[in-house]
Image 1 (cartoon, rainbow, N blue to C red):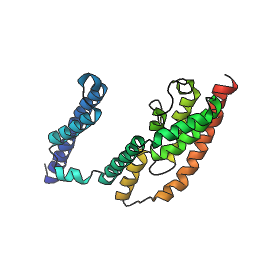
Image 2 (image 1 turned 90 degrees about the vertical axis):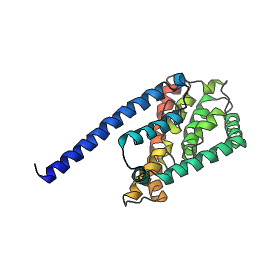
Image 3 (image 1 turned 180 degrees about the vertical axis):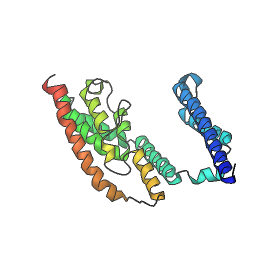
Image 4 (image 1 turned 30 degrees about the vertical axis):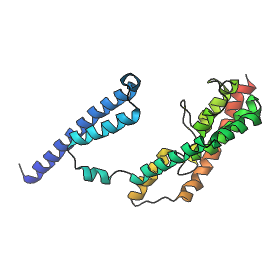
Length: 222
């Protein structure tokens, strides 16, 4: 058995062990996410404990692992949620949502279209979900099976669906920010405006396709 063969065997054993350890920790973390209400643990705590457990069991160098963390992305999201929280606490989100509710006056069709295009625009600033929370939940407009909520699923972000509006800009969705950071580290930098140039076209087309779908499903054949 030559030195090269032994080196390759050790390399394979090392990463096979890391694979099984990662799968084990992932299983535990997933189960904890599902049972977090029973365990009385916040999802953030579960994620942090899972990450630290994996780091401890993997026997990897913490400094080397830290180099691969997308720190600019994490700082960006921290600042983003601070900004959204400030808008909520100062009443800006509540005023905008109240104005939108008053503008449609309880009419389903206008409300559906306003929410479809409005949530697509607002999803780029990550405030759509918070805007919905500040609207009037007692109105039929905001019932779970209403066309307005389905419009929110298409244009913005909501617990039952993902948004199409987030495709418009680099900061419209978390996946966009992460992948741009990874691309830059790989030497393939994509600028904000370069992303928007293509993303905006895709967003307008996909949101426009939702208009006949919502109209036909909830109004034309209702």
